[in-house]
Length: 357
Image (cartoon, rainbow, N blue to C red; front, top):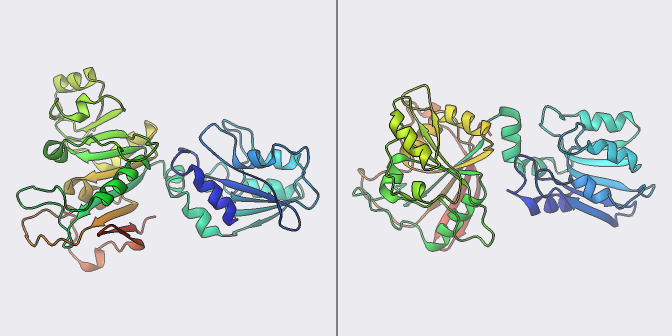
């Protein structure tokens, strides 16, 4: 099963909206006969790749698969049909599929047809490699990661606004990699005005460039910004009901998709629902503090990645990485699980998960 997980991770961040899945076929002595993984949406599933060269598998063959085989028709036929056709007698499943169309039905179909099925092998690991899929397939909302680069005392800039650079070169490279690992990247209007970021991955060997999203209630953004001028990727502006018709027309003329909230100030939850309808399954929020604070306040964030330098700014007027959360009691403070601490050059990277994950 650990090999199946390893295979699944070969295609990590490249299969949306599908999960990553690995499969390994072994004989009774544990010798590997075949293996495979799902490469991208529309491509053969992991079980298909592992079983395709067999007319029927050896009598003692065991199929290990990291996620429950599907039992419904999508872009490809059900994997349960293929498993039965290839006469697999024993299947070991890492975790059940949270997809309501599957969710135990694949295992039930196999058992009903005489296949011995074991479940829950390396279950936590198999579930955790599909955090994005697990979130969006159940909730109909994108998986959201908030990312910030901060000083040791949690500041993202000097009181003057100077922010380049709080963390080191290696942290910035990793930050760019995070962009490639999400389908969309979002910032607020103030960050666009202050930094004019490109919002692209310029360091990975084979970068996937995310959809660029800007939150600007009034729609008033500089038309000389990279967001408007650079048209290499899809761009979305999240606006409130107060945006002028003229501004909307000008943005659309530049190829920007404009999503207008019924409220003057669009909520993060509302925008995420619209983005999901537009095909976005995961989004990285890079700033600023007001947008990150709003997302946390609305319980819209699943994962937090903090890049922390050894610098201390020590100015209470300097901005922190998160804006106002509206919390008055310590008992209401969200308690994140600190999943991973990694040293990157002279900085630390903390990966944390919110309790709603």
